[in-house]
Length: 342
Image (cartoon, rainbow, N blue to C red; front, side, top):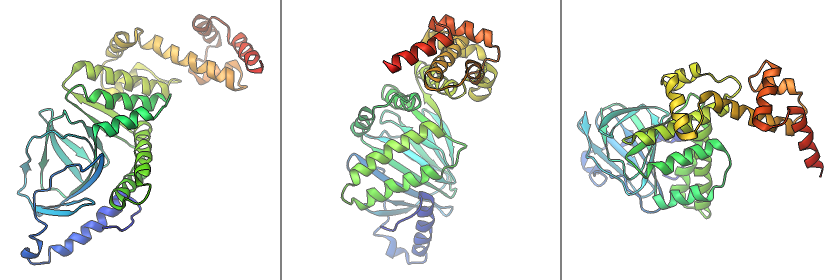
């Protein structure tokens, strides 16, 4: 199965037409392929594509083999833990698992990341669906995260979440309302390299995974499901920080309630617990930091900068800036210009 495809959805459509031809063959011609399709990993990286159909047929495609079996729906698989990190993407339809003792339903376009500590079981309902599994050894994932130096707070957020997974029973669930074409092309790239193993394929896989994680940070909303309350709180803090940085000019506790579904008092509690300051102080800190960047790097007027970061009252902005920086905005800009020239 070395054909080239534009994205992972196109590959799934081709595979469906491919295995539909099998169903017209006598049963004995399929016997050599029929077996229980286990998700395992032969090295540091592997992909496995599952197609489920309404008639109970399940097909799995990897670079090593094609397997098929007939299931009786609905049915629950065995609870198990992997010796690798598993990322799956719902390409088509929906997919269900029992994770942390709860039944979880995942829709098309969702991404889920589980570490080897997280016990789970697949639950098959007989719906037509397709799921791509990407398996990464923990050591390989660690090397990716450690080698990728970044000061980007969004990427640091996701990398922190992946690292936290290793310490408790948890899984990461990612959703997006953005166009999924970029993710689907990246996933197809990973499958192609896994199947082809052409010269340099390892480097392409590494780069594609880094780009995938970057897209997850910028286009997806991350939710941690964990047996640890502390882990939930810390991931909420990172998610809050991410959202506030992206919307620092107009963020409100009311908007946070809409997005995160917690009472506004809870945001104050977790920020004070883990960052030492409440919501209002935290927003002011981020806004003044951004104002400093704009004063140093642009020729925008002080009033324009004040409005950009959410302050229409110019006097109040001057007061806040003086309080946080110890200088007025104008003096700060002149001091930065002098230091740049020297």
